[in-house]
Length: 142
Image (tube, rainbow, N blue to C red; front, side):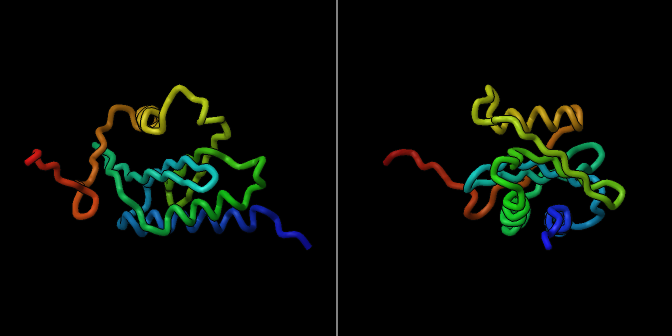
């Protein structure tokens, strides 16, 4: 007996939302996750709509693996290349893009900016400060 793909994909997508919620904490409504993905790489961008602004979150170390696991449930010729995942009223919704991003005139930052603007208008995005291993200091030559 074969397993219906949705019996696997539903729980995998739910795990993505649960991990995103755990990373952010608080009320899950307003979580927005934008993902671009391909063979061997995944680029998640996690946000929370805070009303007057969007707040960016790093997300957990497990989030990319959860996304890759869900992506790999699809047959290779039917895999999406981008996902917009939202949580609203206690439910998640995932929209998928199947276009060829590698031949696009936009880079991933431009696409993310366009998608955020389309979805949230001119709300500013607040990014966390870089700390620890995320930063480096430039020193003048000796």
